[in-house]
Length: 84
Image 1 (cartoon, one colour):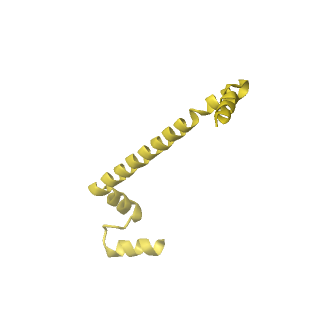
Image 2: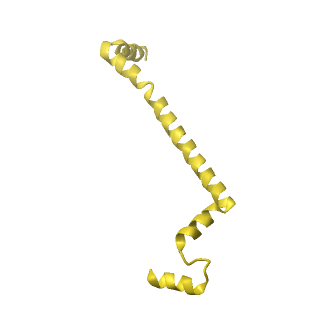
């Protein structure tokens, strides 16, 4: 077992291999950081949607975009449906 340890250390100390391993040490940290930032952004966006839905803003936007005849009575609504 002592031979295996020395052998691994020898590989890590060799010229190009050591630099290659040292350069890869920060990659996982960066990947975890990117995943964390994406997760926090997603949670923030869902929070904004939750507040917009709770305040009724999403319903207003859907009603405004759904039909020009909404709120003007049944004849205007039927006319809008037929024209569609």
